[in-house]
Length: 623
Image 1 (spheres, rainbow, N blue to C red):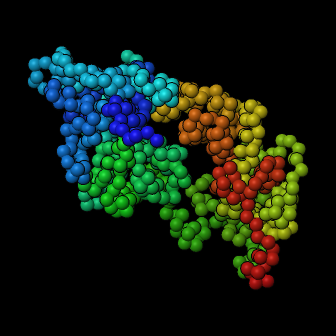
Image 2: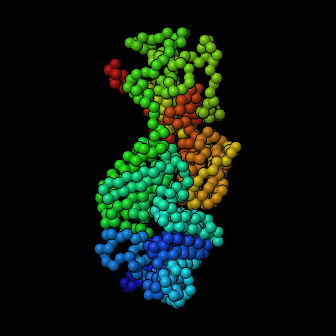
Image 3: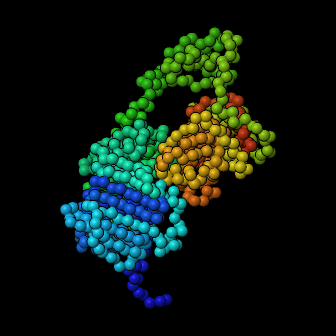
């Protein structure tokens, strides 16, 4: 081994740059934060070549004199703290003094600045970590920092950068995250000479969030516990998205990625959110500076709270209480008749049963000849036919007393077996039978299919079963590149982040191979023009958002994301819990399960089937 030696300053700065300067968006974040710390009320960001060619940040802040300017490009030079004790109450974005020297070591840096009331300004130039050159310069009050040819002297880093479109989108997202908690500052974003986005000054963060996320369904949730306060501007649960990409979290105005706060938001929504989904919007938490440690991550995107559990409990309870009065919560409250008539045990008022069906005495309930339709607690709210008594089976749709009820359009016709069933081995869960051999009995809670086999009773989760069938068919079609696309008569416009729009542009061919046709319409707008034909009844907007989010999570290797994306598609195009299934539809689904490579679980890992042997059932009832 060679002898121990100190690294040259330029090498040490390049190593530090690897932690601080990850991509152009990281540079933009550090420079804009410095501008905000300087008291700026207007910040303009200009980028060229996705930020790799040039990034310029201009502000109207306090500016710097020549002595401070010369020190500002040296490592660990800062005006924010003076001792270790100051770290306990940091109230500024920056405090380490690492950003500017780290950026200067991997780029060509120029800082031009003039303090308020000064006769002239000064500029400093640093190229690739070389000694700084300081000289007088004419400029407006404030500071302009220009970073050119990022990573020009570290080609190994530069080759890992994405396309200019993707890097530019990441820069715009970084600026948006900085703009949300600072409505008192005007932000402008220019890309290759054109103004792409501009946020004017607002009165409060709520207005800024609504400007960033133009969604009328966002609700304002406020509350406080002692010295901790929470402001949430969040969307309804039905618009929740996979992953937390569209949920912005802030602690004392600093954008963070914190699992504690994510879990608190999910807990506040409770059972209204599916696992892994989070609402769109922003949550701004204010805590005493001494109760939060921001010196955890090189990019200051992670924090630690002093009373970790206390913060979690406080944020959860505040958001939960505030959400109880949100417009989308009040709209979902069921009528009082549901609780008084259904849960309390009293049945809705019903007219006499049909003449051809005699009532069955309550003490002896005879099994109906056909599967009974579950009582509808909303019957009195619907202009429907008279409801039967609780003990009478529903009237026969084909009764000679009147014309047959028109057949409703089936949502589950895709389960009809379109090709001969391949021979399948018996399933152990079914007592040695196949699904098609089961006798369908009925539907339970509009969620579970009750079947009878030779060996016992079988329950199937209708959504998990349908999801498995749809997934296998989608996977087979994708492997042969024959996924049929159903064009939409009227394309649907959806709002996405700039990085997602860039991803749509880059992966358009891959999405088309999956049967999803997406087209960018603007920096943050995408048009959904087509969906897979076998998923034509799915919600195009939610389907497109979840598919794009799944591809974004998997990174550059699309082949590794295919099964996860297909599973997401299958989930959208399958029978849901709560959907009513007719007898032919249920039987078609059972037969379709025998035609796929069934492993007992849906593509997301949930079990499809549960069985109980006759002997076990008899033991439970004491026979």
